Amino acid sequence: RHGIRTAVCLTLALWIGRVLDLSHGYWVPMTVAIVLRADYGATFSYGLLRVAGTIMGLLLTTAVLHFLPAGPWAALAVMAVLCGAFRYFGTVHYGVAVTALTGMVVLLLALAGEPPEPTMLARLIATVVGSAMALAAYGLWPTREHQQIRPTLVGLLRAYGLYLASLGAARQAHERREARNGARVARANAEAALARLLAEPNTSPSMAELTQSLLTNSNRLARTLMALDAAVGSPAAAPAQRRAQALIDQGAASLEQIAAAVARQAQPPCISPRLRALQRDLARDPAAAGAGEVAAELATLGDRLVDNINTLGHIVERAPAASP
Image: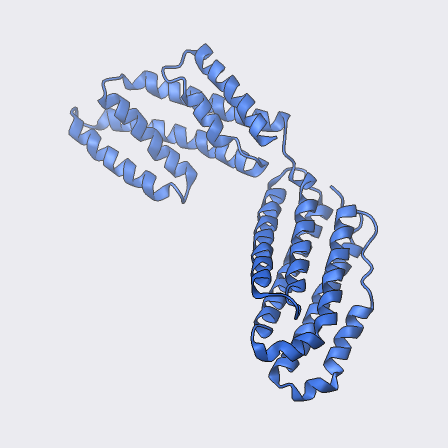
C-alpha cells in the first residue's frame, strides 16, 4: 500500500511542479519522497521539520546574502559552515539538517549566477506543497498500525516459542542459533510497531496497554530464554537438559496457545496446569541432587519460565476486548 501511495503521490507532484512552473520542478516530488513514510508519526514529524527547516534556512540565507560583503569567499566560508552542520546533524536532527541544506542549495545557485530571490521562493513553495501533499496522501489512504499490530505480536510470541523449543535436547546448535536470531528480529519489529502505534492519533487505550504489557513481559521471557540457552550450552548440561525436555515442550505449546489467542481476538488462552506440575517435578527430581549446579540452575530457570508464560497468558486473558 505504501509503495502504491508513494508512486501516485510522486506522479501528482511532478505534474503540480510543472503547473506551478517552479524554477526547480523536481523539488516538489523530492519533498514528497522524503516526507511520505509508511506510518503517521514519521510522516507528520518529517513534514513539520521539513517546512520549519526550510523556512529557517531561507531566513538564514537571506541574512547571509544581505549582510555579507560581495564576493565569493565570504559565501564559500558560510558554505563550509553549513556543510559541516549538515554532515553533523544529518543523523541527529532532521530539522537542523534541512536548515543547513536549504542554505547550501541557495548559496550554490547564487554562486552559479542565479538570482537568490526566485530560488528561495520556489523552494519555499515546493516544500510547503510537497509536505502538504504527503500529509494529505497519508490522510486519504492511511496505513493504520493498529490493523497490523496483532500479527506482529503473534509473530513475536511464536518466535519465542520456537526459541524455547530449540533449547530441547534433540536440537542442534545451528537450529538454536537461527531461532535466537529470529526472536531478536521479532522483538525489534514489535518495539518499532509499538512506537508507531503510540504515535498514531485515536489509538485505542486498551490496544496500546495490551501491546505494551505483552512487549514488556515478553522481554522478561527473553531474558529467561537467554539464561536457559547459556545453561544448556555445555555438554555437561545434557542429562539435566533431557530431564527438562517435557517442561520445554509444554512451555513452547503454551506460547503457541497464547499467540493463537492474540490472533483470534476472542477466546483467552487456557494454560495447562501441567506446565506448573512439570516445573515442580523438575525441581523435586531426586536425580537432580547429584547433577551439580547445572540441574539446580535449570530448576530455578524453569520456575522463572513458567512465571513468564503464565503472566503473558494472564495479560491476554484479562484484555479480551482490546481489539483495534
